[in-house]
Length: 164
Image (cartoon, rainbow, N blue to C red; front, side, top):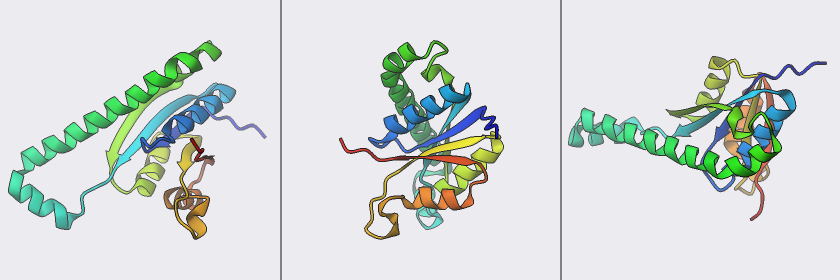
């Protein structure tokens, strides 16, 4: 069975675990000579909160602030990539972090947006981290990861959280 993995979608949340998730995606991309698309989902405003905020500050200012947050997030992702760059690229002549072809930042429900981007980018594999913060079934697999695993139609590499 050939895996034929050419595009990996790596969903990140900019937590302390992000470097491990990106590193795992790079290792997987290296093994398959694939490219990586990074995805970060910003939480969306509940309409009950957004309406009063927009009416107070105006729609243009609200949109401007959302765009600024998106730009800040992209800058933070690029910083993480730069921090990983030197050590990883020494091991990969084709460029470890050079395999990252795109950074996507959207607002919305993480599960829905991850699955939508998997389809939109025709990703062959999805890489995401698992935080598992609760005491029930979420202990080992976080709720977003669990929901994505149930609905994904492509291979999923789940990167467990590591102790620091």
